[in-house]
Length: 302
Image (cartoon, rainbow, N blue to C red):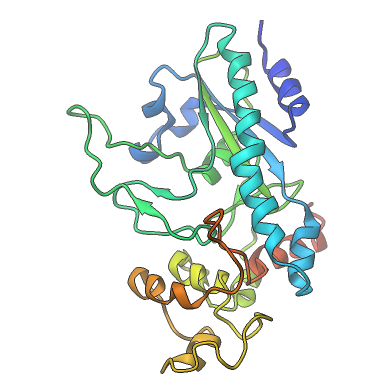
């Protein structure tokens, strides 16, 4: 018989660094487009698992030594290879006992209908604008869970002022997957500590001024500067945007980008290859996460 203890043991055996189980009742009242009950109506809980992103991948970006491996190893490999094998193993374990296991990995390039944001890690994102419900009263597909909130409900992380998950073990250096299941399990309490103290260091660190204490993360602004449209990018030379009338404003992070203007400038922000994988190399060094991690360490919260 599968118990919460056994599920957690197997999750760690299969490679997870963090594991928690959230009561499905914790999702009551959430946006229906993100509600796990819409995925599995008789769900009893959500199993959340986290995979650490090695700190050294951030350190090499901070030193300006190496940028490519963070996105390839710290993002793509975890989301598209490690976590997929992990989820399939966990799903088989649960379904062999006669229960359902709806596996949820990070859907990096999809947005629910009405969500006009983007993911800076991807070459672009696709909003499901043409999706229609299959029957009256149902939500338009795809239902895409809110991962940071799900991590909080599973007892694994706080949600920061810019909307990402912060764990008490790895800070922001972690990526999550989830399993929505009707397997009856003892659940963990939601995460109740406030790791994010709204210090504002992430706001100051971003070279594109994409983080605001009032409105969180401006994802299109982030996407442009994640790709390197700033003076501290070591690949920038005098020919970059040489004829652009707003060159200095862009390099200084003073130009604001929306979906249309960000997509228009993407072809000119092409410093390292992304075509084989469609993942954009991180040329801002994820400074927001680096200063967040350092701040949490200094406060003794990690």
